[in-house]
Image (cartoon, rainbow, N blue to C red):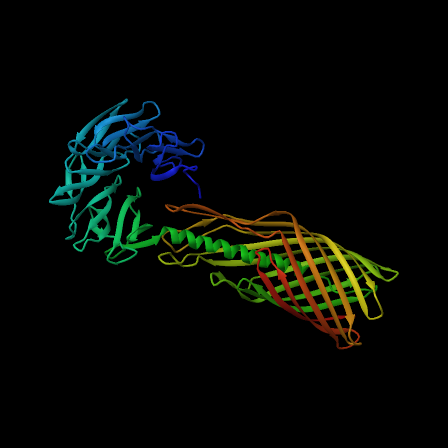
Length: 567
């Protein structure tokens, strides 16, 4: 989102150039205190045109490259002056009236003047006015050959004008009247009609299909619905709809084999809000994948030369309404009394993710580790390196809000993580131990960009990257409760030293582009406890409940249940 006004007071946006680089409208000039025509670019910011002989000015239309701006001066119809701005001439007074639109090349403008609805043709820096009949002319086609507006036959009636056919009044389907706001080069006219019960309805008119009433967000007594602009191919209409104060909406006309054509209506603000929910859900699931990378790097306990260890663990946990049931198999081998290494494999057999995340059981991962350890006078020390990766094939559905579409797409989320850890433990007695450890941890995750399908206004999403490098430290305490039952507790804190928070970018034709940043915590922590029972000298079972603070500032909780052994 761009703040076009750069702090200006009452910035009223009226039009955007075809190249999307220039925004025009009206803002209060902080120097003069007058409402003035303004032109905004990302490089120069706001440029004020100045007042016209003490009259306020308003920009109402801009040509394709932003070099010609048309509008009006004055606050009342009796004092209104048609004005045009160019870089070469500055602000020019074209006489009584107001200009509302201008052709793409900036040579023909339309509005109303002393003779009613008119067009102004430019030759060099001179503008010549030509009345075309009717009262008001609001829209002109990009090539300047067609004009839409309103003519007065007791009440205002929408019209289409061309040099060949002159002024043609459009059928209003029994409504009280209305006016045309815009027309494209193919002669598709859009505007509004006034109903007999004083409602406003948006319309789209074509020479082949005639008048079509566009659907509204509401059918209430204060219904306000109008079409303001039409795309060059005529399939998309933008405007506003709702009760009282209208909301920005888009209509898309989908050709149908049987009449009438299917018209899709979407609420622009709600559509952008649904993309915001996509972003929040994406950040949450990426954090879940990051936590899974850490579990994939956990070792099993091979100690003596020639000893092989294994563990089969099922972990169920979640946060922020998400849950994951992941099973992990780890196998390790001690090649010497000091050196051991191992591998792990994991798969999520069940996931309870946001309803808009599909789960096709493709979440898999694996890890490896290598460890050097040695005894000390009262315990042991170790250094361990580990590496893990995971993959999740994602079926995405954009959340459906009021007057938004149910959109879907497919993506892949991949991640890898690595850690280097150094730790030491001390035997406090024959049955108790105390340890501490610390290290450096890195994780990197990416969700591939994708495009939605099956909707009238599809969004295309860019890649979402999440990087985190952190220092972490922990303390542990263990106690043998009996010969077979052991208990331990562990506390860990983690602090990012470098990170790239995920950012979701999305864009859709006629709606625009949006970029949504996450706000992830740099400090995280985990508290866990374990109780294990030795079935014999080689096999034990255990349960480890845990509670942690995630990067998304949620409380994650869960437990792992497993069986482990050595041979």
